[in-house]
Image 1 (cartoon, rainbow over the protein chains, first blue to last red):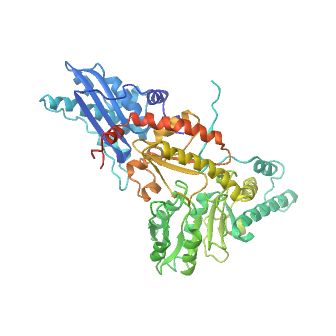
Image 2: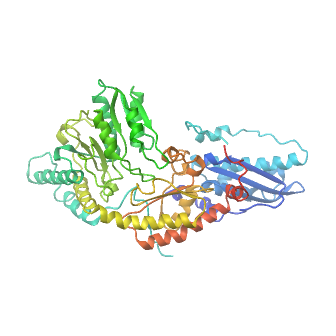
Image 3: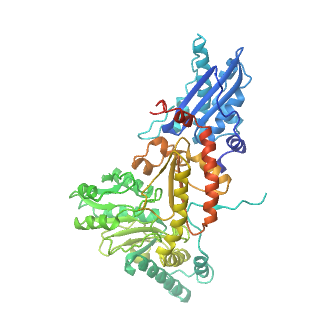
Length: 153
Length: 400
């Protein structure tokens, strides 16, 4: 039922996720999401000479959340921190050949996870964290119709 | 690769149509297609067929013939019962009592009536999903005109003490409706003995066709029409009868209620093996619903640290058709209102899996699910950040 709403690329990254796991002694870690909302992503980065040399993830969530984590970690590997920071949720979703509208927040989560891991690295190294230029509040609209639950990440 | 065998364990969603039911319906699609309201020969045969089906449904419920009204299904029956009684009795009062675990056909109709000025009490349930008769009685006021409590829950399978709840309604002279969509064929129903004034049912839940159902309305109940038009169904429900559908429903309910104990013994034996094995072999699991007072085919278990849609996608990959209370499949991002009403934490509700067994299932299907499911759970837990936290001792960071 749900399978039909996902692209082949999403299903491929869901069934054969790349970069699952943890990095020992990571240089940056970012955990985003909330179990109440049904998705949590934890991104681990290994950074050498300002370049992401390894990226791994652990995710609790739906098919789109797992596929977004897999794709986002693929996309930031080998990138400079500046380039990795530029990775947008739209780029993650496009690389997955699209996500259903109600699942777009999963790609937002992936972007936020990468950002949080990069800033974790920056703060640990005495640098100012980078500011989110475009807050993603609007991308959480799918979450905002709830009555008692607020799942803005 | 050949087509994988489908293991259908979603009978609470819908069922296939039994061969005998299709055979009973076929003539009324081809030769005997007359409009039951016309007077010529083939129309009289249509009229007769509708009467036979009405008798079959009435007999299954221990109702009288003229207390059965054919509808388009469970949602129409629920909407008719609620809105019809509310509109016809608003001079007597504006208070309706239902529960937090009803189907959306009830809950959303209640919300509609609230916007029209009616007041609705949504009764809580205990951790098993049971409504407390004492709580029901305490909720009745002199403005209460209707109580609607489902017979058996579609998600967790809990069977409510309907006769007892109906007796309370009757003692207070309040109409009592029950959504019995999931109960037909699984529980012996007697509307007279169980003090039921109205009852909704839907054919496709008991091996009949989709798009046809019925509302039982006890003689004397004051109820407004929902569908206006022609004089069908004794001027209570307009629209040319769904002839083949009605015939199919009659045949289906006859088959479904012929041997309820025998049917239940077979289905619940498979379900019990599934439940017991999963609970014993997979840690961090919790049975949702009542251990005994539940529908024979219903399995509903929460698997901590993982999310339901991911489970469904993997099960689907193995040909297993299942369902979840996770938000991710509801289109709403909120988990099942039923699981939340039983007090299940939101994050655990996301990891619930419902399997509903029925007549197509075999012991071999149970074996397949028992071989596949543990692997799916392990695989998803291994990539879950919550599972890691749990094995390291919960640090509380993931709870909000």
